[in-house]
Image (tube, rainbow, N blue to C red; front, side, top):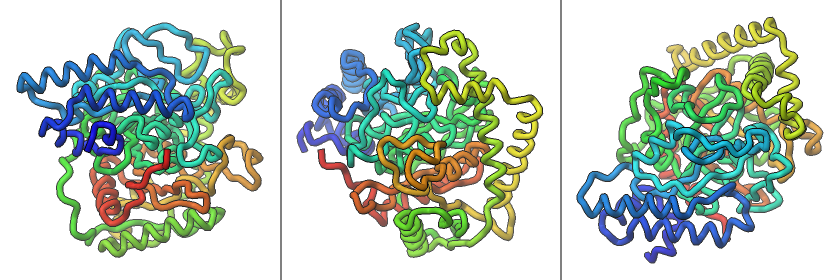
Length: 470
């Protein structure tokens, strides 16, 4: 295989080729930068590319390898950052004009961990304004590489497009109400939203701190596992970071069967108001898990609607707090959607926030009970990511943005409220040959279990191995 054919190599393949000296980190970096230069003018996924920085990093990695130094778990792997991660000396714009061009004083913890593992950071990818629902008017939105007329997901839109198009091997996404899961589902990727606090948020510009999760977006569960392993761990400088936060066990051979694993299925949640194509995807995935030996358990999720209302109230209040230094001072530099949410947050009363927190705790504990109760004892819960396919210009939260659309946040926001981990997996394609994804939700700290399920599923299917024709 030539360097030019390295686009779709997974992380293990990259490591093996580097070990056998069939390729160098510098050659892989050049091949990736060349692909970005060729394709991204059409796809618009990157906010900024740092070719010289990437070349210097790759040269250091090759020199370290020649010197016999130990290689990190992501040695030579091309990675992109969402443009809300601080990089020392570079501005963090978070998709908005209001933050200006002030350079960050130090790297975000996730950047430190990626570089310590040997990743080559290519640049920053585009995102919706402030990680909310629309791109700022100054930003040309990324285009879905499978179909330019279809949705890329929010807010980690650039991350989804760049990984799906082979412009990087993995990227970071953040998820406050679906923004790792949406673009992963829309672009045919595997995306992990970890338990809140497993990956440090220090140096990551917030949308709503207590709801924000940061995690990897990759082309397989194996790759997501490897990036997650490099990122997770306690950060004493991050007040949200979990003290008990061990890395997951290394990936072993996929289990021959999933006997003993119990996957929960709430028919009402997965089917009422959900497009038939997505319902079929869920049922097909359940069939695969059943064939692998897992038990499918019908159960009732805790009441979702009040949880979703609490998510809306807390998100608005925390969004207003995140932008307190620049809003309303720079109100004229904000887009309408983010501005409206900030205004809502500024008006929410303390009593409303207290009520939302009470609902939050109750929902989270009831959801954890689904995994802990000996009668249910679930290992994972399957659910849609979105209720229907969306066109490119969809604005979630606005039911009039597409005919008959309902808010996809119903399927994602409650699991931010609970802080639960979720793994998005590709499960097929619709009539327009655009990917369809689904999610597996787990108990707190159950990422390893979700990833093991994802790895077994992807051993039995090839949806994750298909790529857009570019």
